[in-house]
Image (cartoon, rainbow, N blue to C red):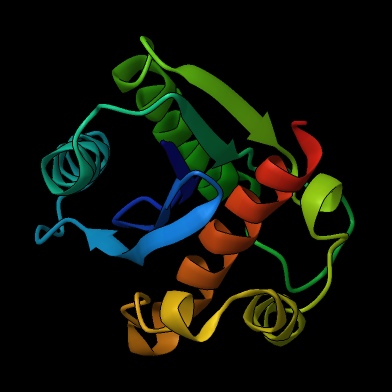
Length: 155
């Protein structure tokens, strides 16, 4: 079993795969609007409560700061995301944990392109297992794409 996570401070896109097939994909979020570090703790607790801890591999996107790029997240936001990744790694320390930088798995393409590419590779049955979350659905598509990248490159 594989868990792929697109980390967020108050919501994480997740995708669970078994034997290379998508089992579920959704957004897991904290119900609280606490400041750091309480928000981080609430999000990690929600993640573990929702999907558990029994995975062979956990794949997480590693946040990156891209100096000089306009319209991208602020460095302080990326540092907070890095704390989320650290908490995920600590929580799933008994699993094999793998991280990928965004450019390593999606080549920095726009969100709609990631969704299109992922949709093309999924079966109708797998597509029915995705629980979209409105404007935050791009996090779910990223988690699925991240998991697929690991599956396709780990053998």
